[in-house]
Amino acid sequence: MKPLFDKVLIANRGEIALRVARTCREMGIRTVAVHSTADRDARFVSYADESVHIGPGPAKRSYLYVPNVIEAALRTGAEAIHPGYGFLSEDADFAQVCAENGITFIGPRPEVMECVGDKARVRSLMAAAGLPVLPGSEGTVPTLGDAEAIAGEIGYPVIVKAAAGGGGRGIEVAGDRAELQEVYRRTTALARQVFGNGDVYIERYLPAARHVEIQLLCDELGNAVHLGERDCSLQRRNQKLIEEAPSPALPQRLRALLGEYAVAGARSVGYTGAGTMEFLVDPAGNVTFMEINGRIQVEHPVTEMLTGIDLVREQIRVAAGHPLPFTQQEVRFTGAAVECRVNAEDPRAGFRPTPGRLEVFRVPGGPGTRVDSGFAQGDTVPPNYDSLVAKVIVWAPSREEAIARAQRALAEFEVGGPGVATTIPLLRQLLAHPSFERAEHTTRFVDELMAEQPTTRWAA
Image (tube, rainbow, N blue to C red; front, side, top):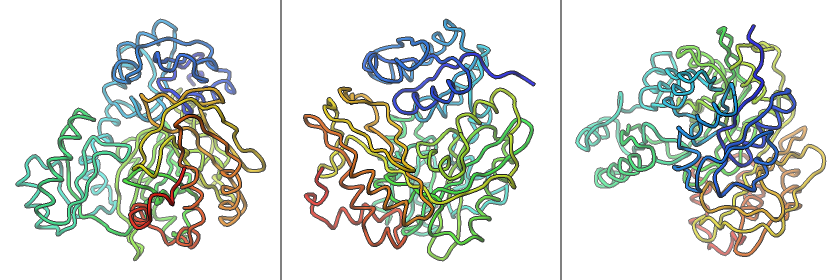
């Protein structure tokens, strides 16, 4: 069996880079941090065993600039690259370049990544594997005329999605033909600009649904297990705010069915590593496949708290050729977990990012409380990247206790500085909302609630 790696380069930044480096240290693996000029003093840089400067602040000239990342790996003798999430984590071309340079990409094989990264193509493949999908286009929709014809067949409202999209971007809803014309133009333009690929596809839109995802682990020997679901329905503009597990809206029958669907779908495309199969669940309990995320997710700590399994450790072991150390029957789920994303954003101003120096940064502690962050007091949140400041994750024996613990932890979290606002007040108000407490919320809940309430309610 292939031994574990001696050195891993982490092609990312912030909290996920630090989180990967911590597991590597526990495993006796040396780490290399790559960083931009904006991140030269960041915690993940000083924590790693080595660091390499790969470019200026803009991500396209540093974290997304493949030649510099590969050169850093070759120069430091890194045998593998962990891409984290975002940036190059779902880039099939990057995975291929790693292979061509004798570097192990900690993730799916390039051909599998190419397959799951095309959301229109994988939708058809999952339908062929027996997973339910919403009525929609068979593949991408090359012209507005094609889009109008398909929408006329399946009925409005429809949702237009970027085939190469991710992170909640490149997704818009059209309620009629006139709106579809504008939505199609905007989505294709944004997809070309952000993802370098203007292809889009269309599905019927579910106006009231839960967003439920299944965590997967698959090894090179054909073993595949799921680690339960996470409910990600509390989101605004397709950006997740609060995630929890287990989902309070799933009966055991649906929970088991989603796990079976996820494993079958992953096996059908030869998936390896950690990944997530995403589904929509409508009020009648009907489930439909949405997409596959071929990487570790931002909300992976929710599953770790529930199962005690270190997902990054298993990613690394699988990439090194090791089999999964447990079977499906050996996976145990205990209690309930909630994750709250604390962003440097002002909800009163349409979630405008508020970068700046963190003059105060005191994280919560106590039983069942975990905080993943790439910042410390005195650090600066740069304007160049995602505004995530920290993830507050809690575990408790029941959902009610987990929500109370999350409230307590957020109340303890002191973070701020000149011009820096955060989403903490909004998160606390969402946790306390009767619709959330009763688990009646859907993916539209936050957007509808904020549209109804004056912006002063969401003071930072």
